[in-house]
Length: 221
Length: 266
Image 1: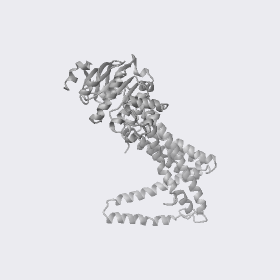
Image 2: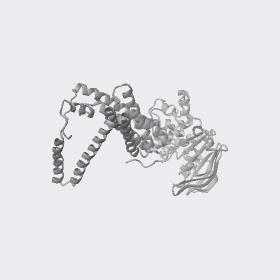
Image 3: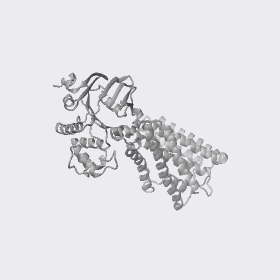
Image 4: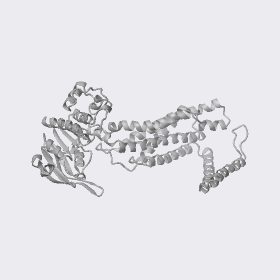
């Protein structure tokens, strides 16, 4: 579904990604793992065209990303950031940022998918806990109907209980067939959630394959 | 030639009076020296520069009013726009191409405001009106443009995560940045709205002061001041709006990506 073909990103004198090639299969969750500064988040931003590669290309359904209308592409490839970023004053307003015509019924369905069933749509977003806010961000990303969900360390800013709640939502979305790309520094979490893994070190791919067989992920236990 | 025009017109100091006012510079120098502030030389330089600059500007305006007519005055205003663009462009250098954005914003604000006043015959299209009134409009437009560009640059850095969260939902850059653009414009406008609210209460504004010194009756002088205050509102709003719109475009590339932060203006 998403293919990185010899992608490099150079910023000034620093090579952030160096000739990275990887295939992110449809209907599966691929973890992008590696130590801090390995280029994981940079790789994720490339997939949403929030960043352009210095060389190489990213393909989506076989076509280079620049061949798609960028706004349409971002609706098909959703992104959930590291710390929750709320954009509306109320739950409904937040869900409608990417889809103005969202009905209250559709909004309530999204909240169920994000594990927030029963949350009032008129609730102020300022009163949400970190875990609730991050699940609302997930629901908001789902509101525009993405085929792929990019998750940039979605639980790193949360406590253990809130992180587990978010994980459960991500697992159910993957079980429903959504393609996911997960950047995580938590190797145990990557093993729990991911089918495949791409391990980066200093901007280079050092391991790819099934998460269950990954030596890097196994090093967590 | 150096005598003051003391007839029925304005009450203006004679050149002898101006010379006597040098004593006031002496007062400042005395304070500076007595308190050992190390600013004595600067005070003298400032005082000398002020008189040289003002004599030069006065002479130039005299030539302008008598020889070049309206075209020369408009050229003078255009020069002021260029200076204003340079000042505002520097202030907002965190926005790519800030100088060009500032030039366009100030030019549109000044042309629109001044043009409207002239077309509606609120002010006369003559050099001695166009130059000072144009100066006030350019100053207001420059102020508004500076604040907008500075705030745009700051917002693009401070609110990057919010902006990228909206972009990631497929919103076009204009929409993704809209709340921040409004914040910038609001900041630019509130200062002048406050100035309009308190006009006459805190200090007498410049145009009114000038007319009072020129012997105009207070209730007549305020008519000009009312026009000036409204003109400032319009200039700030129009220039600020143009700066906000054009500046926003500069912050994003063709792929609706927020540009990497440039160094913010001091």
